[in-house]
Length: 267
Image (cartoon, rainbow, N blue to C red; front, side):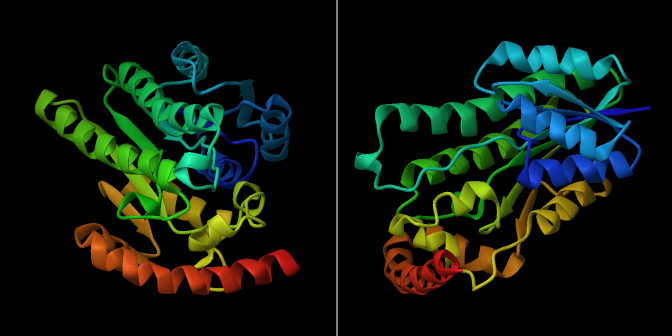
């Protein structure tokens, strides 16, 4: 039986990804900084899942997780899902919040990818899936620090695939870039006007299950970058290519997002 790791799987997208991988026959190691949440996910899945506390900011924790996963079978899938979100103007964040986003969202992905590759490279390959964001493609006022970490995750994932290809290591890298997702992480920021851009895609956010299904589907794909939904990615990429024009367009989308955000908070 092959094994899989999903970080930040105590709830939301990570929990649904873990559920999907278990349904495909993987032995899934669920990790989260909230150990109780990780255990709740594993218990909900059943015999094919185990839980382990992990702070993804610690590089040694990833090596320990890789070792624990390998005890149950060759490591075939690693999903770097753990992340944090703060929605304020860049100069208003506390130093601790800036450090936490960079360490969890970016360094956590780097440490996890390195540990996964070290475990997979001698056993015939595997898949490493990194959670980026639609905010990885262009400017995202209100999410400047968060967006910067996701830009970096996307660039790292693409470059790392090149390194793997040149080294002849058959590991597939994937960066997943979803639009706003209805998770507790997002709803915890819904009262903040700076979160408006997250809600600009429509009145209904993506569901965690929708995103998880797309993530699990990457196991039959060599897609390097997956955007969800694809239509919004065109706008995001345009804004990134022409940032001055993009910023003007985003003022309109922020107004739309603000209406939607207020609707969510009023429910």
